[in-house]
Length: 247
Image (cartoon, rainbow, N blue to C red; front, side, top):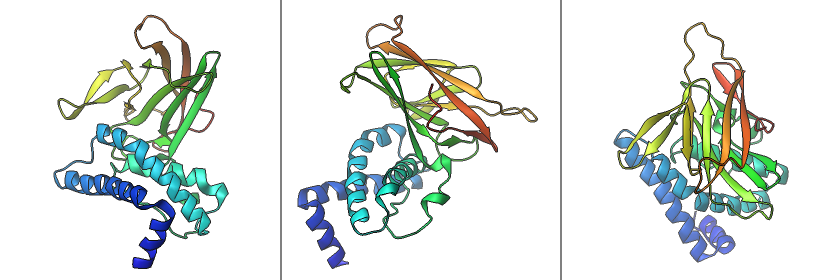
């Protein structure tokens, strides 16, 4: 074990390794403590930790590719699986840094993050979501929807987003109340995660559902900069999405 850590230290450097370990302690330890109290890390905790955790995964991907544990072609699938596992399991999942041929082929869509984008004349809309959603499967309160917008140079643009649905409804994390709250079939936020959920009545087919998102300026909810539609395709007891779902 000492030799393993020495190798990781040489690759990452002492400061980066300390940061990575701090993240892991926050993610794993915090989630375990929260689980003992009856809940996972909050959606706000996960959102705040995600950028640094993803940076750590990017560096780790370099290492495991170098060691031959995954191929360069599997890098993106591995990253999306690890991030999906992070969100789906409230920070209490696992890091698959091991040689396990066929592992990624067995990953369920609902356990993998899906990064979608749509181009507009003024920039690009990005939506992070999951590859599938089933009402009774997973720890999240619904299908995660996290949006951002960049200009034509790829620079972040302060924006708001209006989410609309014809079936089901949206919910979001109320940090002050420490709970998930329902916000109806239309909801405006600043891009931080919203969740769509729907439980079809018994005997009702799932159908293809559409979730609409409008891009708004940060200071004017009446002016729409662009509109996109997220298509959810029936699959088993829920819905699946793919790279073509944002239109």
